[in-house]
Image 1 (cartoon, rainbow, N blue to C red):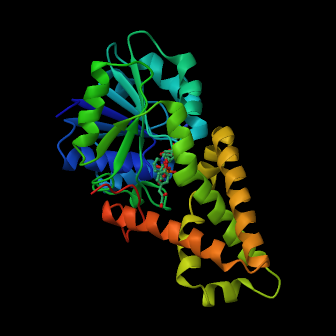
Image 2 (tube, rainbow, N blue to C red):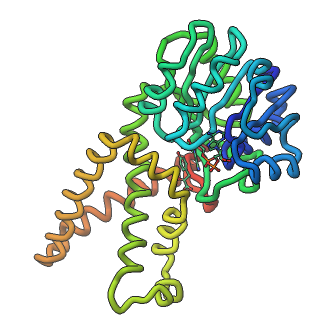
Length: 301
Ligand SMILES: NC(=O)C1=CN([C@@H]2O[C@H](COP(=O)(O)OP(=O)(O)OC[C@H]3O[C@@H](n4cnc5c(N)ncnc54)[C@H](O)[C@@H]3O)[C@@H](O)[C@H]2O)C=CC1
Ligand SMILES: O=C(O)C(=O)Cc1ccc(O)cc1
């Protein structure tokens, strides 16, 4: 057991999965959840995944916790940190699970105390669903979790690494900046493309929404799953990872334009060369065991 008492702030998809995993993998003696939504708190109580649930204020839970994990939408991290940190006990560890790291660190840092250690984290695992019912104890098994500590060699980093490894995750350490550009490429821009493509298909003249549903081929279906992801969370992701997202979008537009030109000029060789390269990436992912039919990604073995 890495931490005795844990407080999860925001018991939705990821928070409730940490709660379930902490119990299933024996990673916490006592686990509390606080959430500002009445329906989320009722669901958490009904599911019986926490030793205590609090709607709104959680001063007592915060004062008891050795680890507090912020699992709220990215845009809420700062205001939640401001409320929770003053009540935390001296020597406790604070972490988060936000899909971007630079903006979360910027939002939380003004409220940090010298006797609290903040280790930002991002489990690269999830689904297009939200809320406590959607979580699972095995959400993080065989997935990556990236930690972006702002100081090197902290014992708390090792402790948090042990915690995530205890769920069956593989842990890597990165700078926040590197995390944000890597994830813009592998997660944020792919989501943006899915949102765009599904919107385009639905808006297309002569192609009614019904026909889109009726004739959706495998490729389009995969995009609709991603484009069903939580609107609030993804708005926050794009607005808080603007720089990296825009950089990757620019590259994408250039590459799309090159393929468009190849089609226009009937340049089959360019198309073949490109598709062979992308097929090779797919093979490497499959060979590394990182493919999964499940709605989750980041599997590492
Ligand atoms: N959805 C996914 O697949 C993944 C999400 N993440 C990150 O995890 C975090 C949470 O995302 P999900 O669990 O998917 O969202 P969710 O919507 O399922 O859960 C968020 C929970 O936070 C609660 N909440 C919102 N504001 C609050 C506040 N001020 N105080 C207390 N509770 C509050 C909501 O009521 C909700 O229950 C986000 O920062 C996201 O970037 C990370 C990896 C994967
Ligand atoms: O459902 C999917 O395919 C995902 O991409 C899940 C996901 C969403 C956000 C993250 O920060 C990490 C993983």
